[in-house]
Length: 240
Image (cartoon, rainbow, N blue to C red):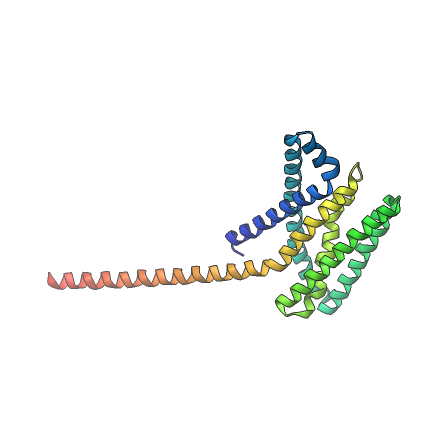
């Protein structure tokens, strides 16, 4: 990928993370944060809070971008180690099951004091799994390669859960709100990366091809100019 296309890709992912986090913060924290500030005319506090969440979304987006490129490396290493895509897919399925079990048993269960807590946690996990499945199906349709379904699911489930741990570790006041808010930018940015990266790679290949054609054309023109200069010099020499 060229630097220009990588910057475009990273910037779009950054904007998606910031916007989704900001919107989700307005939805989730309206009742106990934005609403009271707006009602009291405290616009500065409300806007400052919104900007803070947007900046938090930028940070989460960068974490997701590092996670995606780390996954691409791990995926290639996994295929090389197991020497079989089928075996590697089974390993990825096992890791997904372990990650889901870890979230439910170690992250949700100790803090689920009421039925409402369980409803929230299981609902968020369901959102993650449904989003992962839909994104993986979309990826298969885009590439027409059924064997990448498990890899796409693994990235959307396992890697997203690893990145979600940042929020799951937050157990201060309003911790459940952060868990809710941060899940959505993680899913949005990861889905964007998984589905859109090939387009940027293709654009980079096209840009490099055009650059090579321009270089060849420039060299051809330079060679032609040199030949014309030599011919002109010969004519001048004959005239003398």
